[in-house]
Image (cartoon, rainbow, N blue to C red; front, side, top):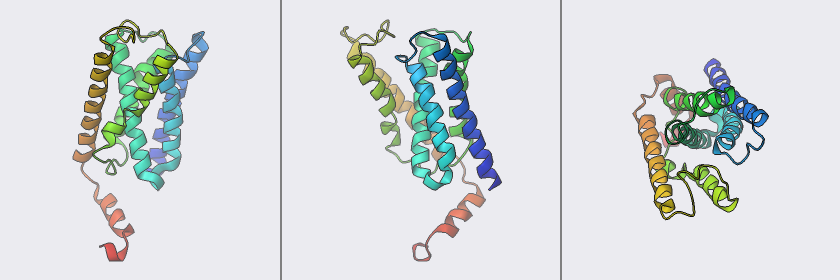
Length: 199
């Protein structure tokens, strides 16, 4: 019970960091809504709040959501720091592009149960970046045009490369989850919870 409370508090910390980054961006920029960084931070705040509340009661849903959030936030972090060559000079940028993504990665690697992860999860984890891409094209968002311009012939190749990279990251997270040792207490609890006829 104590470990569940600690894990819930940890997830609330991640949610808070996501909302802090989003809040500072909203307070700083005139029109922050079209940016993936702000949308991802808001989604992380809401998503990790849901993860903290649901806990072990809905492990498959929680596991899927944690993986999807980690992939999305890593996309934001790596793209911002490498492709865009952005800086972390402001509080909002620091939280959006470094603190929250690293906490999400740490959560996946070190905290909580990830045994419910399925082989197809990494493919489905691209749903949030794909949703943003659809919005990006339909709303004619002018951000990121230096490397992501629908009017150029290389747009499809760029999108395909990003999606393949995200799926690869997803399978790396999947491999980490499967490689983690299962605590003895956790295995005993799962065995005790199984129906008698299933043993």
